[in-house]
Amino acid sequence: MGNVVIGRMDKLDEWTTEVPFTKSSEKSPDGNETVLLSLQKFDKGRSGGKDVRLFVPSELVVECKDLSNVSVYFDLELYPFFQRIKEVMKSDEKPRGVLRMRRKVLEEAGDSVMIGDLFVLSALVGEPSEVMMKRTRGEVRPSHVILTVDFGGGTMGHLEYTFASEGERIEFEWSGIKRIIEFDSDEMTPLTPDGLTTLPLSYNLDAILSGAHPADEDLLQSLNKYRSLLNGGGLR
Image (cartoon, rainbow, N blue to C red; front, side):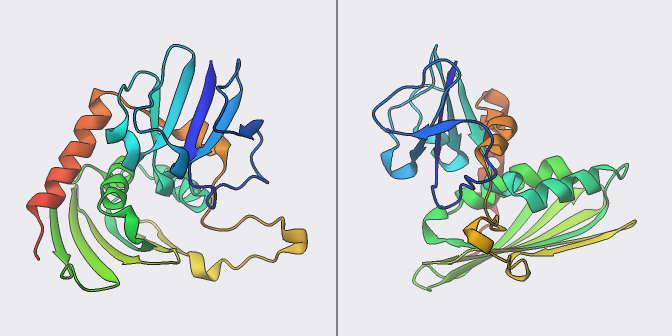
């Protein structure tokens, strides 16, 4: 069964991608081939099917006509820095502490980036039971959102988002009982001999294919739950 991956071309790290792939909007994958399409070329009526697995970012799952053989991926979960943090934190029996994250994202990301982050973080530190939101007024640019999240079990989260016209950044801090973890993408300025160095806020196709989640009823219910938490906690 072939794969069709819908994604942002500027986020894909081709140099560390090991699975063979092609970029085309005019062909369907043959056999185990993987075809990469940009977000702009995504057909909103498209779905997976008998012979094709479709991989879409979380914000597009609601636009898939049929969810058969559709998998969903979340950008935060795919970044190498987060994969490493997840490995370290999962070595603790039950992480307890305070999680702080600041993200600067593009305006078009909208609430879907926050919903996706809650999904990813819930697997790391626990299911959120309460979310309090503060948001700048709609006409303010860039706009800002602050989420205070109760993840249960003695773990709290403070998540800040800036929605801007350009540029991206992630700051992540975990203050736990056994360890403190910090990451700032702006401090990860790589050397670029021959332009081959991986950028901090990029990921490869291998991570998408191995880390995406089936678009089943459980996932859809989780996303709807986090959307409801955000809508119920909004202060404008």
